Image 1 (cartoon, rainbow, N blue to C red):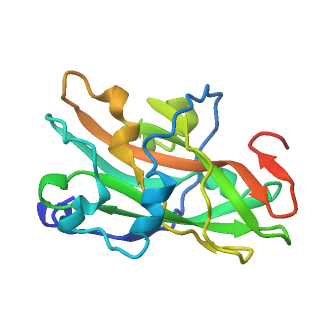
Image 2: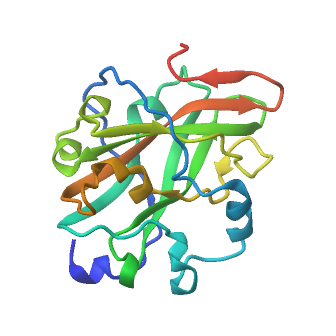
Length: 208
């Protein structure tokens, strides 16, 4: 990626056209402080990320030769018709200036295959090396893994783009930072781990 592209704030909906080659077992480490708290997320809905609000980033910039090249979603899960809901796209962006290499997943598109609206969802995520990502690997290549708290989609229709929830990728990557330094090129991949519906049912990953 060119220096010019790195210095340009990009809000990109990622439509992933490749499939992961295979899925391995993964023990998910649960923590949720990298997603903006609900009250702050609601306050930020009418704002755009910019230098005046640090692009909503809060994590200090580590030293070292590092870069988060992008974000995508688990295309294998999304295309599995046994799942009542899939992810149809991601909006993410990078900062400028002091936040040049920071990556934020702002929102996602939810594709609901059920007749009732979604009232909440959780995302699982993995961080992998860019090399493993390019090799088509998936959860078996996770350097780190976790799950968000329950997120309000912010809409009452069956499907659509969620309101911004702002998953700060560098916060998720904290365990990779050693003595204030980070090294490597990384990718973050998300998937749905739980979906709650307005009529009561709760779907959880791997319950098929």
